[in-house]
Image (cartoon, rainbow, N blue to C red; front, side):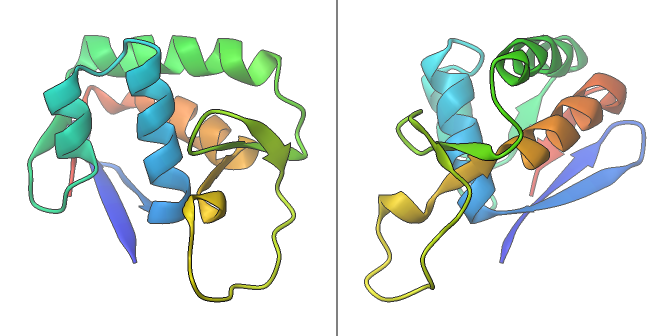
Length: 121
C-alpha cells in the first residue's frame, strides 16, 4: 500500500510508504514543506499538495541531494544514509524499515520537474 501522486499535467506516480515517509521527512527538514503541508502529505485523504513552483524547487533540491548520494544507498526516516539492503520483513516494523532509495528519489525528481504541481492521494 502507498500513495499516488497526481500531477496537474495528467500523469501520476505510485510510491509505497517505505519510500514516501522518509521523502516527506527530508523535504520538511530542509524547509521545502511547511509543518501542515508535510502532515497532509503523509496522511491518507488529507489533501496534500505542491504547487508547480514548489515541485520544481523539490526537483532542484533532490538533484543536489542525489549528486552526493551513491546509487546503492538510501535515506532513512531520520535522514541518515544507509545501504538499501534490508533484512527480511519481520515484526515489529520499526522506523528502520523506512528508506527512500536513491532510485526512488531520482524518479520523484523527474516527476516533480514535469508535473506542473501535484496532489497526494
